[in-house]
Image (cartoon, rainbow, N blue to C red):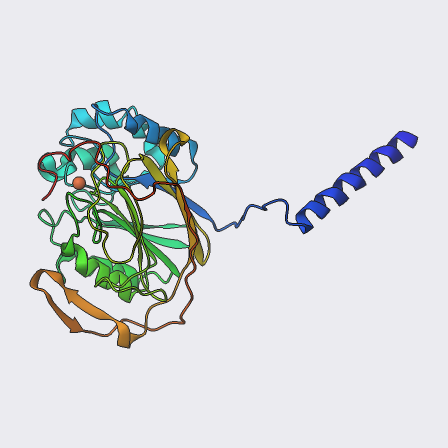
Length: 356
Ligand SMILES: [Fe+2]
């Protein structure tokens, strides 16, 4: 009896101590939400000449959730052999929970046929490269921005599909990802205005986040409009994650609204998608080097009077109406940034012919 009393007293003391520590804020209580979803990934990934892809593969393998690829999955040309021998032993280990995007190097083999064969139904309808799915409370859209292979223009099959898909999903939070970044400060590819019609549609429907690659750097932008104007209320935050392991480019003059850039650390981005908000964290390969993290809130669709359609290829703009208007939500961000986060170091030349 005395022993039971002693145990009960000890338990009560431990509980009181734990409550006191929590009350004092000494323990960071992890945010847990049943609707949370985790997405983790990068682009410009697997080459048999590089060992960095194995290091980034270890990161995605150790992280739960859905693995996303941002294109250029298997270098140099997306052949069946390169998928089997270069991608397979690294990122292929988590193929069963991977939702990929297609890159220009995947198209170096006609029709990107080995890409579609390798990923199968996980890559959406064969030959298209665009599809969507839900992750927790979020709607996720994957697009094909190899615009010299499939049209990205307003009115194209893909752009019409995108608008119909967004109109058919009423999720408060929307993420899109694809290969060629709309805005980027690298010294090789730079901005890709051809994807402007996709940004137009996503902005009008209130999308929150876009992930891209193609430029072999990491870069994070403040929320902005499709025409590059800061918009903390309704803008789309773009994060470029071309750090999957193939190589690094250098960094040129920063584009407007660029907040963080790094061109020396391989790694992946981990997104935790909450109901109504999101966190991001750049995970460096081998646990070393640059990192970046922060959080943002989802927003509704912008007022009709603020939306504009951009026709980038012809350098003209015209005003149009957005589909609907919903309540404005504030966006908040915090950043943890390692020393040397901004750099112009170039460790390896970009692959030949990597542009369209
Ligand atoms: Fe690329």
